[in-house]
Image 1: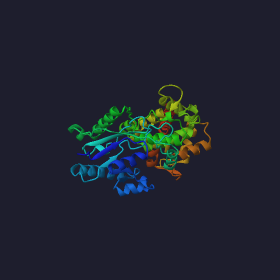
Image 2 (image 1 turned 120 degrees about the horizontal axis):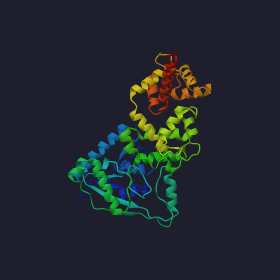
Image 3 (image 1 turned 180 degrees about the horizontal axis):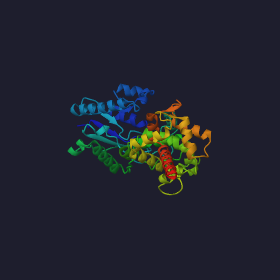
Image 4 (image 1 turned 90 degrees about the horizontal axis):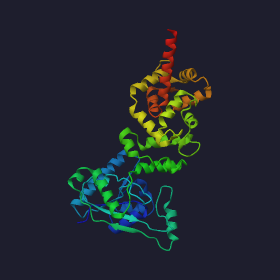
Amino acid sequence: MLAPVIVCNHISFMDGLFIFYVWNGSGISRSENGKMPVIGSLMHGTQSILIDRSSSESRKAGFNTIVKRAKLAYENPEFKQIELFPEGTTTNGTALVQFKVGAFAAGVPVQPIVLKYPNKYCDLTWPPNVSVGSTVLWMAVQFVNFMEAEFLPPYNPNEQEKADPQLYADNVRNYMAKASGLPTTEHSYDDCKLMFEASKLKLPENAVTSLQMEPINKIFNLSVEDAKLLLKEFAKYDNSREGKLTMNDFARLVNLPEDSQVVQDLFFNMDKDEDGLVSFKEYILGIAFWKAKTPAGLIKEAFDIFDTGHDGLISMDDVGLLLKNLFPKMTPADTEKFFGNLDKDSKGRISLEDFVACAQNHPHYVKIAQLMQKKQASQEEELL
């Protein structure tokens, strides 16, 4: 009996064409691929499941459809097999990244396939910044293009794996890695998204390769979309483009004087390896830890300190009064820029809701408020 689900590593757009040629099953792909010439028509003609990755509802519906179709194909061989690339993205083929659980959630047998492209001159890997057209052109100018496909014996899950899709996915990945001689890496599709974002921002690859978003998300509830926003902000102030911030870079990021206690406390707290620089890994983990450990009540206290007018809103005058007291060297232009970073909607006033949303990713706002509170307490003691 054929396994109802086919799982394969993902390297090139040629992978899907080859598997379709051999099995004529139904694929799973992002919705954008359904609009591609030829490939899109094949997807629609084979009743492939197209998922809008930007929509949580589409991802959930796609997951449920995969489970339903896999079970139907297992119970009735007349139904088309489901063909999936559980890595969720294309890679360079030198390792197997983490598998998503969709292919394994139904708890039915899977048919593993390992693909390799042993071409010497023509690289058939398909990263996001390489078009199908250019890859086809390179293939066309080769005398011959090679693909190796290794069909492994079907993998039948035990009861423990049926009850735990993640365990099932991990064991199948290890099975494929052992049979093919490929190593595994704990990087996931989200890590690849972050790497692609770093490439767009002209940051070096090693700026994000040491990060693994899955454990960060599980421990700190920080999504890859949050990480991309932090990366954009980080890159904006990384003058060296080496994926590290100097003290001066960091001061410009938080828009405060470099010699201020707030900047120095935050910088040295994030600089875990004490090399005088803050890497993106140190920066994002510092923000994630701050976001997870800071109670809402502390942020509310910080808001009340900024709200010198006590009207439930922070104005430019409120911020200017507080910053002038703490940082005499700050110019009106610096104050306006600082306020602008808080006032994302340019409304001229900042509500508690807006402040909380901003302060969760920017601990210096609360640090400033705490410093102001200490200074006020010190002044009161001197009067007594």
